[in-house]
Amino acid sequence: MINRRHLIATGAAAAMAGCGQVERPLYSADAHVADYPTVQGVQAMARMVEERTGGRQRVKIFAGAQLGSERDTLELTIFGALDLNRVNLAPLNAFASETIIPSLPFLFNSVEHMRTSLDGAPGQAILDALRPHGLVGLCFYDSGARSFYNTRGPVHAPEDLQGLKIRVQNSDLYVAMVQALGANPTPMSFTEVYQGLVQGVIDGAENNMPSYESTRHFEAARYYSYSRHVMAPEILVMSKHRWDRLSVEDQDIFQQAARDSVPVMRELWDARVNNARDRVLASGVETNEIADIGAFSVRMESVWGRFVASDVQRRLVEDIRNLGGQV
Image (cartoon, rainbow, N blue to C red; front, side, top):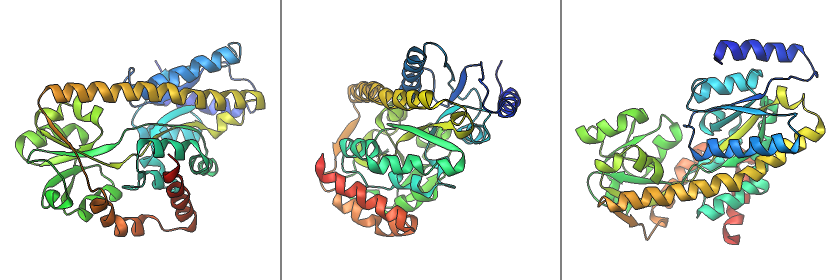
């Protein structure tokens, strides 16, 4: 049985071994369940690595938060007790300010724009920013386009959100975004949202379509409005301690396998989105496109002013915006 104590012990032993070969598989963590697209993406990468190294390198994946929360496993990865980790960007914001940028509301004008940006120079700059903090960024995985849903009615303009109690993550950025749109942000554990909707503690929430469907939030909140306000990705990282013990050849293999796993993950994600949408529509949920997204994005000036504070961040924003017209 692998647990946190075992990981710390094996990580310390590996560190003492210096550049020696560690015979055990590389351990990889993911908070999502085994059939989730990010887990399947890492599984695809693992198969490629094993094949391309002739079995010298193997990856063992612990899905479903078996090794703890993302914040816990991130600490283990930085320490070197955990080799690979698929995490949300939020836990990285505290020490690498570049990771805040993809979470900015209304930064990307489409899924294609998001993918082009993260596959290109802006994405590489964000991955590179992790190295001074003990992590090697390998690739980005999709986490969907987040939109608003509620129990009251469709959202066509910011005024339709006025006064609504909207559940948000425990994130200053998300709180500021919802406030700027005129709603009342209500930080709440994700596991409490369904009951909160049923009991009227909150009027709505925001999330991607697969999460809206899989949590059965659509049974309580029957209006889903495609604002696509945030398209923050997820990220696959390797402990720099482990990376530095790989040969240059194996580093190249891991890096390329990670990149090659991205289209695999995206194909699975897109299928999941379509299936979730079909199920939601079949239940009678009312969905709507928002014709004037500009009415929402114009309210983000104060939010961006607060969270985009450095020249490095501003250059990233500019580079990403410049790519928006190329997709």
